[in-house]
Image (cartoon, rainbow over all chains, first blue to last red; front, side):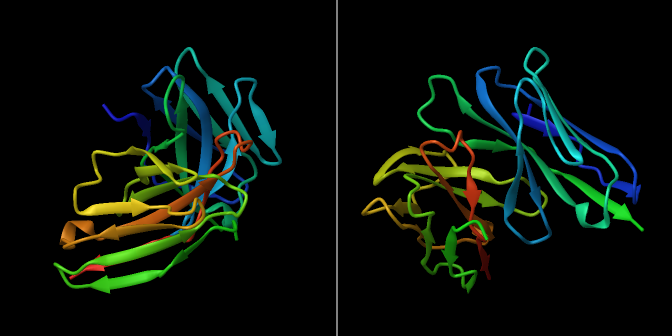
Length: 113
Length: 114
């Protein structure tokens, strides 16, 4: 079983749609949670950290359920510029020596005009 | 631009050659990570430095790989006797003490082994 699992997609949605990405992680000792965005042949860029209380940044909302080991990302009113791969990322294990990040394989989003 | 730089951006080499990549992290960040990413996969952790100390190495890092961070600033990753399976994007990430584990990635070095 992969440490971080997410649906690879692709998700093809029209402009203005709401799209949700889900992710599960296997290590219950994980401390930190993120969504990164990666454009084709570019480096991953931090989209948002995910907190237990949930957090929102404009059109983006992230949720964390520690009991279910489940992370989600909601994008409202999607734009053409949102087209990218969205990576679910988990890091920092309690008692661990490093904060290495464990990435899912990514979910490809294509927003259509 | 995250402030993390990597050099070179692209490297094409023949099997069996040695290659070296460099990463310059954000200047005040003391933590530096190397990851490798192949097509269709997320990045995978290779190794971690806190200042000049290499504190963790992945099992992915075979004996042909070595990394250094001699003065706790820039880091180098060397691959000896490259193999076609080493072809990948090599990413460096920088993290500060108070960054809450938020890591910022450089543009990567894309390695192609012929």
